[in-house]
Amino acid sequence: MHIMEGFLPWEWCLVWWIISTPFLYLGIIGLQNVMKDNREFLPLLGVCGAFIFILSALKLPSVSGSSSHPTGTGLSTICFGVFVTSIIASIVLLFQALLLAHGGLSVLGANIFSMAIAGPLVAYGVYTSLKNTSISIYITVFLTCATADLTTYIITSLQLALAYPAMVGGILSSFIAFLSIFAVTQLPLAIVEGCILALVFKYIMQLKPEMLIKLKVFSEKKIQEATSLEGSF
Amino acid sequence: MTTSFFANRSLEIITLVAILLFITLFLITSFGGEHEFRGTDDLGSELVAELTGMTVDEYDPLIPQYEPPSKEIEALLFALQASFGALLLGLIFGYWLGQRKTES
Image (cartoon, rainbow over all chains, first blue to last red; front, top):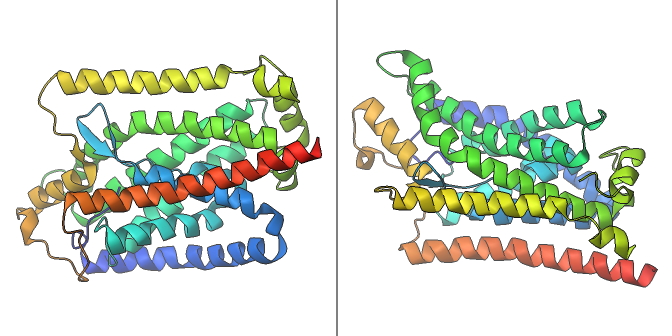
């Protein structure tokens, strides 16, 4: 999902930086809150961050004959929300921009918006609309994580399409062209990512249910049901 | 405690099946024709070049940046990133498992 350095006109770089900055500001406040007042949640934050680090380092081959990164932002979105997630994902993106030439400093704002903000934001919508329904926790986590991953790539396509409308068909036709590169490759990756993170969530729930209840990630009743009921999943 | 930890493994099985299916699809694709499995980031850049009628090399970084001198160095840095995450993960889950043991 990285837009490469130099491949976005500076006007657009500026636009995405301006849009991303308030999220990062709120993210820093959220992170400070966890660091200062809720230190008991730091290990969970570490686990969520670790998955963003691991998954976004892996370039996986896909059915389309090209390779792409998963994002891993869904788990953190569920546990800590959009803003804190945006900071963790931005750290990874900064690392990749500075040392790996994946993305760059001028396009960092755009890449932060797609991976660290838009993906988590849409995923958070999926999560909040499902969390209090009768839908299983695991399906909720799966859908949330897969959505975060896939949305990131849809937004990247949109960002490139906005900057480079096609001669014929304009923004829409170039959006479809970019989607056919990014989204098709990403769909199987998003599904696998969703499964893995749902599994990780199961282990967190078994080891530290009280932490998830305290963070109001899911209702106490739902978590108790999921950890005690056998055969439901 | 131990029963709930080991009794229910369907999510593990589903995940395993998903991964195996993914590998199968990858094998079918890679044996089914000429595929280079290049990064989508580069493919995206190429499409940008195609849309603007320029070549990829004509795009210069707006802000000068460090580029890993070789693919090996790049692989090293990605491996470091992943291993940092894995280290943190092992540390925390180990800590939680230990905590749980002392509690019970």
